[in-house]
Image (tube, rainbow, N blue to C red; front, top):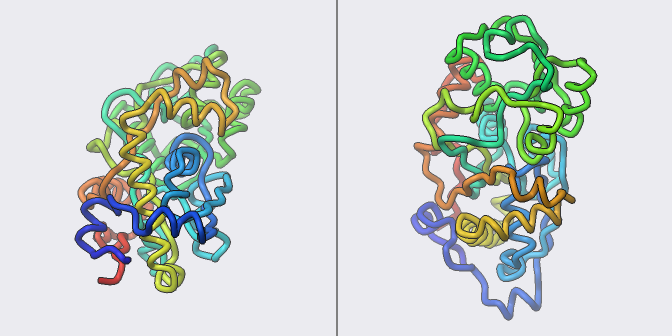
Length: 314
């Protein structure tokens, strides 16, 4: 059974689309690309806690270097689904690339969070202004993370135009800081927490200059695939919704899943900041992302958040 537009948007599939017996007898195999870190953790939760299995899916996740790379892979057909930075999705949609959001993933909450600017503990850099003329590592350029960092600099008295951005994989950032090949890095958990023995942060939340909470990561698929596999997409969104509801009330269990799937030391798993998982596709939580991307020139013009969201056929 395919969900109606209203029920899909309101609850992203609050009830699973197939009976458990059918799910067990004939699982549908799908692939999903996820970025490193906690931003794509909803996929791991849904797999490890059996929500995909209950929805009749055999899900095969693969970790890629960044959400931007995931977006490219999904567009090209290498993966059925992907956990993608909403900024990358907007950049893809504006020129007409066929990516649509089918379910929310990670929200950026107000207050302290595990995505922030990190410097070596012995660095003379103490504030945003000290970053003027410096080199900063980032996992992908022209994303919402990049725009949020520029907004953070503006708010705290730095000069966004003077900072040199250097793209690199998240796992390499700690070593690059220690060897002084970069002056600062924009990290996400668990890499932020893992690096704090040798490093320190410059603020509690990279996104503090944007109205929070915002939808930072979402699950997407390509329109041609969705047209041919609408029921499978609804099943996947249903499982993601169930996992999000579970995750938001089970922090301790989430840490256990991440410790196992990311091979984290208990001390790291117990102290990382867990993203709040979205349970509905609220366009108002995408608007601040669009606004900051336009402000810093990463989008030529604004687009309607509703245009980024897939709605299954009635």
